[in-house]
Length: 166
Length: 397
Image (cartoon, rainbow over all chains, first blue to last red; front, side, top):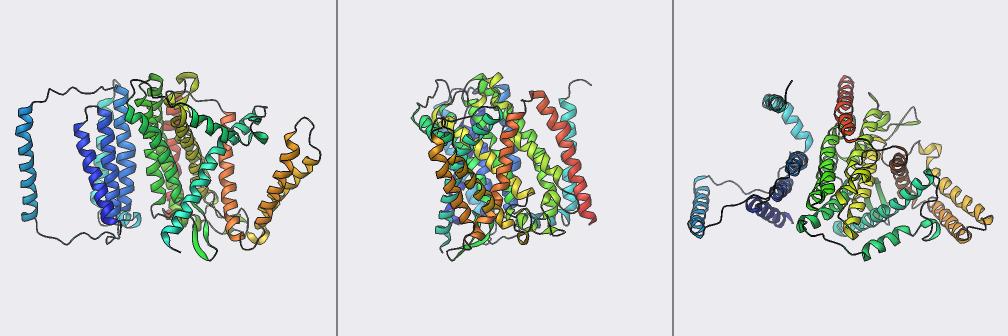
């Protein structure tokens, strides 16, 4: 009953936050807009039945990674960035180009991609923690382990690069 | 009854109780701290300072809310709102009691039950740091900024042991939903010892419980880990610039966080609403005996009140009758299945909340480097070892 209005609301919030992320000059405001995008994406996942993904999106992206971003911005005390003065000519050329690109993209998507059935909210039932865990540790075991080793290598690399002298 | 009407009634009830609890937690904290330090605590407003929270509220409401020059106004106003919003949200997944029938309506005692309940709590509490960090940054004050920085570093560090300490009992109860978690802890070993997670079968989760409690102190920014608002170094930390209701919002968020984390610990480790010993040995009579005893004691002392404490001559008999009435409520057969689980839940959470205040009255504050070293070199390794041992023993059985 509330599915479609909720979807439209949070999709609009996500897009608005994403635009705000680019337009803001101060890094803190941009980072907080990104948190807004991630939060609304989590709600969209939840509407589609991906409970586990929604919670993990909030815990990992919004709650851990973005807190680190904000922490670093606050620690370095980064100020508002200076934009080169905006030119009317540039905007006059860019805006039509932007709309043309958007229209082209829309046409490509509607004509090139085959038509699929509409998404039904609540139809997908396998988004819980139990079913995701079962799939990860049986069918997708190899990709899962390979990814975890890749992340481990990245962490070790970051430590080696960030360390001063032995 | 209509689902929406029922949910609205329950939400209103929980909101009123939680907000009153937050206000009175301040009174309880000041009173307990006072008695720990051999002074009476708040005493002037109402009998034994019982109306102190009300007068605090009036004071904060009527104060001028100053917005200093050179702050980022939007973020400055957003921070206390975020803090209190996120602190109050987590309560929705906490189960306060079993499924009961009140006036012919069957319902769960608790607002909702998510399949990912514990992940929801983790997600909301990991977002909670934004309120403090943004507030500290937007104030444009070096003390506030340091407080916000410390808070974000501390909360990220202590979230790891907290999550690992939560993961260990989850291996035993095999569910992420709070209601199923508490259901899994019903029953008794040898007919007397409760099957709570701290006494669980392959590996007792007492270590997870202790790690969880220590990390909870850091997550709620309480002494001995209250570095973000260390008044001896940072004036008042992240809320130095805040006044009036914006300050009250931070204050309320702190107490709501304490209440929520104690509710989570109760459901996860202490068996939620299940009694300490089986009902056939009379555990249902604990609340009326405790409350009735308190009422009788008040009535006895009313008869020989000290002449210097004039309030007591009126407050003791009134409170005594109130307590006796509460005790009588627990003996009404229709209300018993609702009130007894609520009593056990409140008793366990209350003991944990008291521990928070007790620790504040006992321990000094850590130094910042000690705080970080403690998290990463002690708490994190032992929570990993605890999780591995639990996992091994669960796999073997």
